[in-house]
Length: 161
Image 1 (spheres, rainbow, N blue to C red):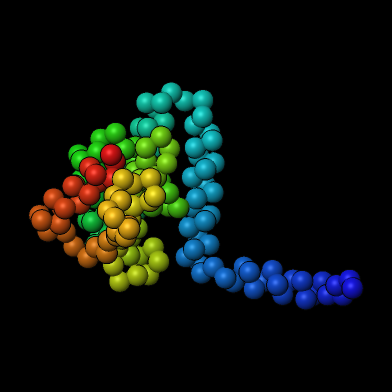
Image 2 (image 1 turned 120 degrees about the horizontal axis):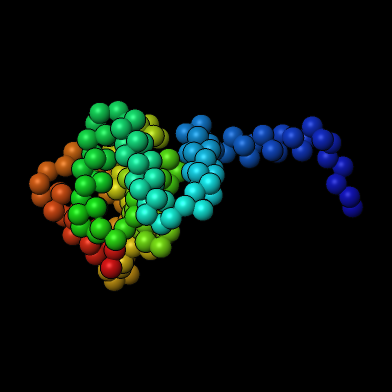
């Protein structure tokens, strides 16, 4: 039997699918598309130029953050750059991330981005953090102590391999 759905019913389905994402998630997807366009435009540039431009993009995005998130993101940036200088900064869904061979290893997500009560430091499946059959891949951040900074440095070193 053939489907007899009207075009109005079909458009209701697409509206439901569109509403499955929050406004913040849709904005992050748009930012990701813009990041991809910027990266494509840089394809003819030298590797050093691409890396410098990506770092400028990350620092500019951090500078736009509200103060509490900016302070955390600046510290995370400094920690990652010191602990794993081979990880390249890049924007990932509009947030600072650090990649090896173009694949994100870790990323920072501001609290403001998704109206959360804390910022997040996350690790992808590219991170070498495996520990038995279960291990954390994201950490909530409200502030950073010296001990937290040391722990993050150790995690990033381990994640980078």
